[in-house]
Length: 317
Image (cartoon, rainbow, N blue to C red; front, side, top):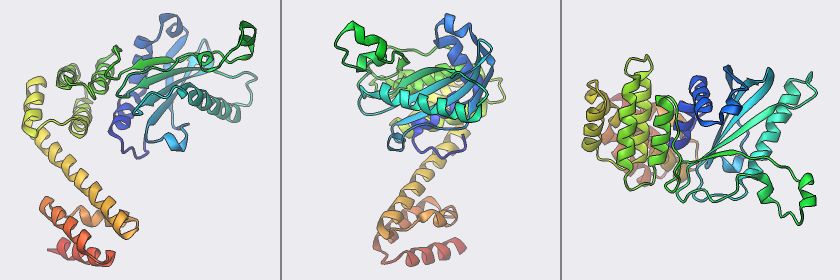
């Protein structure tokens, strides 16, 4: 999970579901029992790889886990879709990703003469609900029953978390928080689901990971939903039992500053056609007021050197 993930939905998906214990709980509670019975979820491990086509990295994320299935190698593959509209040919991409997993397996495990089972699961997060097929054969224009035997026939398990979907994820507190937060996006009554997610956090109160999960959830809510700071602070302090007011205000300011810094870097890159990453250490020294002043200076400066000189001078004061 070390890769940089800028999309807040992708980040939430990978931070929460990317932990093997949470992925195992998701599988145990959201797949049919006759499938789960064959899985040794104690062997489930994350595979540090992505199989998504480059043109879809802004609208998809994936997670691959290896797992023992009936004493054989196997995989659980999660594809997270958050495109503006449902792509009816999503299954064609999905089978392509699965082929990449199989090819990787052949390279790494040449001693096996058969391919492992892959359980494909899709979490859909678009604004209009899923309307595409979940069976690959429904993509193919089959003229007669006699052609079925020559057509690939597989299905994915699709979870529609969109505004129009009725899917509710079940499982431990983390899985239910993930379902509520992703399901809240785009809904008029999103605050009810956000509140429920914070309520569920109380189940993790005595866990060593409570503070980390609180920060993950709070940052996501702050980045995705339009909730005024005071209203969000009241929502969290009412829902979460410990006194987290200081944490909320500190994290709120951190996220806002990170957003301003990201905007400045994009502005520098677009105006001067240069890689702005070298400016990050200088930007870290600026106050919020100085960051606002820098925006005006970037717009008015004839060269990147002028901006760098101002940053160095300001950072020394």
